[in-house]
Length: 610
Image 1 (spheres, rainbow, N blue to C red):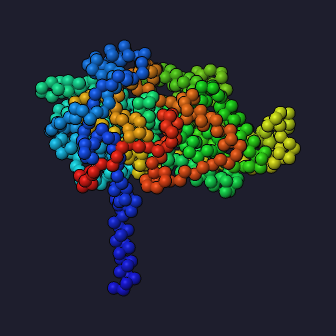
Image 2 (image 1 turned 60 degrees about the vertical axis):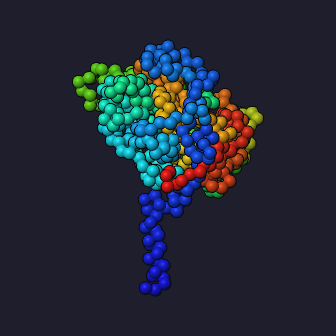
Image 3 (image 1 turned 90 degrees about the vertical axis):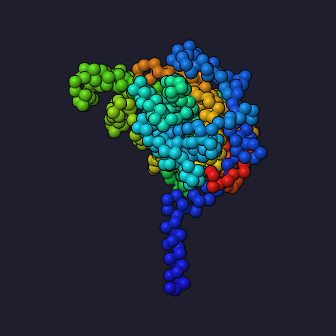
């Protein structure tokens, strides 16, 4: 065999060995060290922490009496009392059997929660994984997680090791089935990794499994871990952010930064970018802070100021006209995924359509599959809503009538970015046909010279649209998410050994070594009107327009609109100058002095034992 043929064979062998998550990058990230909150260390080695009550309590909850009534066993024991990890009273427990499941959409860092759990439980206790989330729990699909398996997935992205599911466990029959599965598998504790809905379910499970599961009357401990890339599971300064948010926003920021650089290079395109985040605009705000785009829409501000769809179109149009007057025909508009539901008139239209559909269902209960005539729906909505419906491009008006099997509007399938492009294009065309009407009589900045108006009329409004969603959910976790989730796992494992139930773990002081907390789920639950009835849920954390992060953004956006202040943060770094960087919105809202996170020291770790 010639040297060239031999070298080619070696290359083929090398490339074959990079499959199944064995790329050069993936092999390297498995070796990355994970800093640990000092409370979980003894002589430089990982050990479970004790938990003790602190003076601090959760913010006052007006729904506490109703919550106390709904959780008669759990609430008296947890209430609004916060626990903090401590070096005193470290649990020394053997033969405990703990299970863990992922619930909802994936988020970077989930695998490290498992690694942290296993490290906290140690060799004297067993960790079991539930396959395919809540549905898998109901089906009893459990297996024991080994150190060897964790060594393969440490610091890697995705939820593929366990799988996940969006099923909810909320009926008496389902609670009874979970109880049976726990009995059959002799489980002492169950860890639920999920968002606000999943942790709400965890609270109800904790109540139903509080006692009388095992023969000696013991119950099953239920604990939660905060996960969602949307960032809408936050608790004041106690839980600064959920895991997965940092990685997702860094990925989206890289993509948006690339597009911003392209606009300045090609000088002829306006890009409309929709970003994941149906219920809150945290992702969009963070990406805006990192990339400085031309226009950024924040759903919560639009709802607060009661902007109409026409006003939003006009706002974007004015930005385009203002830049065109300077001879600049490019820019980027960031749009939150859930924008439509935050526009007051659109929200009212959607609610009226919902009521009309319910009325149709009641009238035709025997014919469930009968399509709802459009004229029936239009006849049941207000004149204002009908006028708004008529103003929408037909394609998008029809989408408002398209519901899932539960009758819910499929917001994520509505391409809001394309709707805005169509409506902005129509508005600009109208302006171009009669520029004097729009600009000739204006004052100050609104008044344009004949030359500026001529440039605007001649310019071409070329657009591109994008939706960044799934791209950000399963990437390899950033250094922050990798360390954050590992420590969340250590906290959850420590709570399980300490015999606690009905808590969600949290880490604060992210810039100063970290402090692990246990937040009582019942203290986080309030009452909200959902689907026409009152439900007990953990409230989603929305972007607050008086928060430091939003105020900083608001102080900068006019300049970002006038000038190309674009920034390209580049790819998330697992080593290098920005590897230890926190989300900007988190650092601003927590009052940190810089962006550097500090979650303690790197412990002595035997990588073969995960």
